[in-house]
Length: 247
Ligand code: APR
Image 1 (cartoon, rainbow, N blue to C red):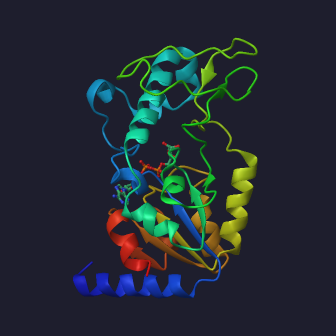
Image 2: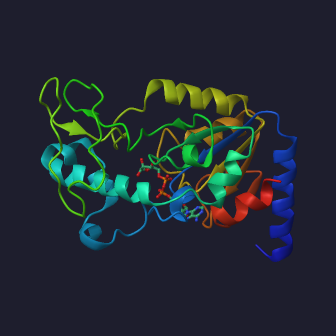
């Protein structure tokens, strides 16, 4: 995109947002990248470099090696606790909108967004892998470091505690998915930020708005399969572009 069309895109997006009556912001891992949280497509570093994030995020992986998977999520949780919301999260928090996120971090909440819908669960809501009852997250800074960690046992049934996130092959929380579809269907404008748009059913959310005649604005440095559904494609980073279009 040349600078003139980039400018026109920013201004078209700002106008759509200013005129929106029912606005939804839909976010993925790229939203938190500039806070220092690696996306799922980034190559992992350190001890995790020999693993693929997609392989750690499955029920089979947890069954095979619970300490490896629990250690990976605890490492991510501790990382998220150390970082801060970026200028993109802050711009979203200034909007009167429904936030629907695939992210399992709490950066939207910490920036001030009210009750974001978490389609893929949360790093901060571990539960029992057997009876499903909520469990307490271990104190941060306990075992520490990278690498495998033995998950705690449930205090009710002694099964292993698992991360409260949605893994590949698992169904999304019904209330969250219904709430997201309802918001997207009713939205006249939806901003999709930092998602590769390849993981379903979440990737359906911006398409719901587009198919109902709403305008979709996309913010992503890279093209994605969602491009054809978007009225405006802004190729740039969340923390740079969002403050520019939220006036
Ligand atoms: N600003 C905006 N977008 C960015 C930035 C940035 N600074 N940096 C990277 N991106 C974009 C990438 O171009 C990519 O399209 O963010 C996207 C990240 O893609 P994924 O890592 O696939 O993240 P996401 O789409 O959220 O993944 C969906 O897959 O692994 C599962 O459950 C997990 O919720 C996750 C889901």
